[in-house]
Image 1 (cartoon, rainbow, N blue to C red):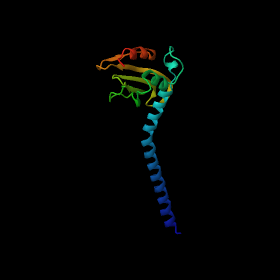
Image 2 (spheres, one colour):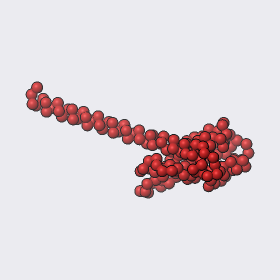
Image 3 (tube, one colour):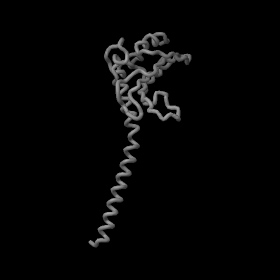
Image 4 (tube, rainbow, N blue to C red):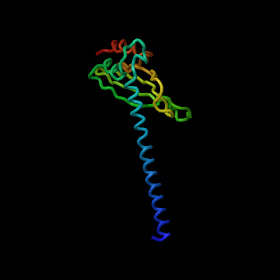
Length: 158
């Protein structure tokens, strides 16, 4: 093989390696948000409710929430910025795992747990960010402690 052909072959190998690296980087960056969403939701679901509210027994948040809303109610989970994104901010935004429930008899429940931040990912101890119950008339009732949820749900028609 001539020197010219070896040089050309070397260039082709470098180009192929660069293209492979570029494609891999694109694929990994495309997967990262979904992976982060999954980690945020998983962190919220497994958060111990006793660490969020000392009046409650030790239980994963997902299990505790399902007990509160009943076995027939479907909990929809999402990862979000806790409602903090305004489009202009440069600060590190919080990451919340949110459980939302449309109650069988009408009304809604929404509970957000902050489990990290956009720049740092999932980190630190989860904390309650925002809690609400919406009645059948669409009136929203915010509450501060998870232990308040059973009382608020008890006031809604079943």
